[in-house]
Image 1 (cartoon, rainbow, N blue to C red):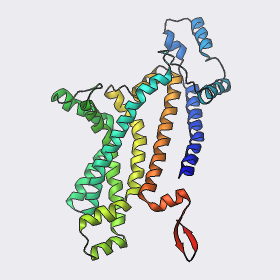
Image 2 (image 1 turned 90 degrees about the horizontal axis):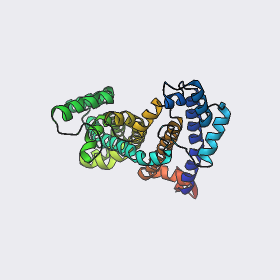
Image 3 (image 1 turned 120 degrees about the horizontal axis):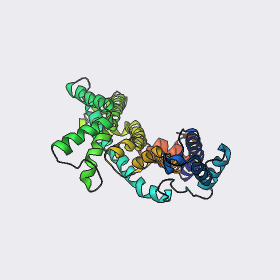
Image 4 (image 1 turned 60 degrees about the vertical axis):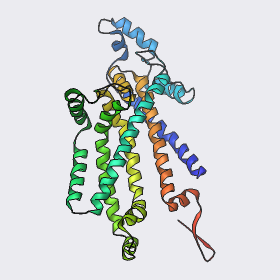
Length: 323
């Protein structure tokens, strides 16, 4: 298992390098001049050119790319923001936990609500329960999260006054953002859980358990659900990764000081170092989450664990038969 983890961590290196090259290239060819934005419209062309020279923006693509890669991956220096002059590492360290909390809440809500909906829909296939669960899933997949967020603010914050409309504080500040951002996760988990459970329900071992008189509760939770968890875990990992991107919009709407607000402001200000560093940190977070998901596969299914460890799963007549 340790060798597998090390191998996966090693493969993260080309992924992070690829993300870095892509983001740097996009920022280089993106229209807009950071020097002009910093100095304002009243600045002369000479002042703009002087600032561009100071910031290193007059260099060519490859010199700037080499300097960026050396500073980032050899010196571990992400630089400072063009606008605030604050160290980017300090800013990200203060904001990244908020984004991870929001994304985790999205994913957990999707699993806690969506999986039971999918199980109920599969067990009661073609019934009114199945139709209601799938309608809920369809609505969750169809409604844009930013539109739902605005509706929730109007209803619960403006009209009823039950919850705060924006900002950060206690647990009540996370309710509306979680409801708005988790609907897509709920929809995906419900549909995937229903599909996985329907495949397992038709299995021979489930039919055998029913013929032996095993209670429906034990069949669902001891036989069907454990064998249907692999696709559910995969969806949970994808939901977390998608939530890192979706949280950017939710943070902007609810004025949460996370990575989303930080990156949106950086895009408007053409703050290239902030955009590049933020994308790298989010790529690292997503890669680590995918590693955790793969390790959860091994925890759920012993066959996958045997593959990771390279151990034989069965022995027959002295010959090793690996999974």
